[in-house]
Image (cartoon, rainbow, N blue to C red; front, side, top):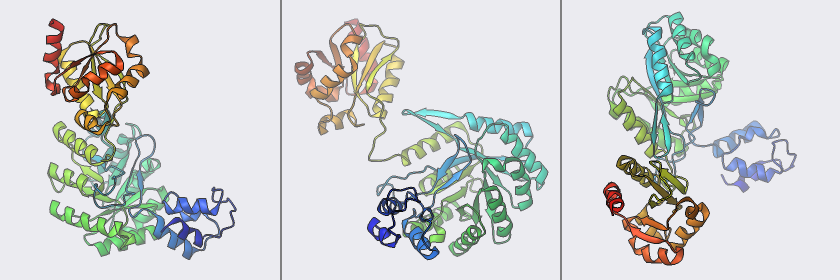
Length: 441
């Protein structure tokens, strides 16, 4: 619904009680999905329902946990990444069983909390602990939840079939707003009541879309503040098919009660491929068993690649980066601010152990070849960067090494800057050998 169409349904009194200066300003924000219609105190319930259905994101946003480690999923509006950016990456939560010794549960939580991989300038982390009630004992489940709580405010996922086990665990960790799994046709009344009492997001589980929609509607009507959908797949193919259909129904707004993020438990499916399928096929929260480091690294890299804006390459800040403790006579290597280029080159430079300066100029995140072809890297860009960074004051010479793919610019850069230009290799892997030759020369 467009802003003017929304505006026609508002009272047009400009009372400001919604927090906006005019009804038109509120309509524009509402049409963009930035506020809920409930902010206007003068709308009747029928109009609120109409505006809510027409302006909210087709997949509602759901937040799991509290504090700095909390994460939000959902709020997606398209089927495919080439149509528009995927906004909220899926939360990956590592399973621990309450039948394990408390010390082991605590150690697993600490490993999840501290796990971090640094890649192309970003820290890739896991998102929380999925605590599974395998004992059938509410007190033991609560003790396990307390052990996880001793490791900080890591988001939690509580998995139990018995609402009594959930209630026991929520007494000790409900303030951290864990995600609770799952409301079914048998227990949805009790689970929705717990979700309402503690303000927790709730997973509803059923094998068919009709039952999922019915459960979601009943649980939200009963006061559950937020819902995720578990399509209960029996195989990985099941999940891919059901998740695709659910997303299609959501983004087309064909079934509003299916407009929630999806949940996937990969443990019964048993392979790393299930985790990859969840990342690729719309899962909002993914429960995984403890995985070896290579599997986690592959999954986090895949998630990073899928949940970045394809129209905005990951960039590093332009500037001068000293490598291997360089002095004023160290060589200066020109590069671009495309993260992958920067970190690849940096890796080879650090391995070569040759002191140097990496001089990064702003090419809007484009690679060397693309930047040269697109006019984002030319003599004026280099000249302005030299002046802006005071490169002349950092080093005691006036020689700069440019990438081999920028060789056509060498003469123009010399004329514009007055610096001597040397052309380096095209392949970053050859930079070490190039610098050693230059140093010997």
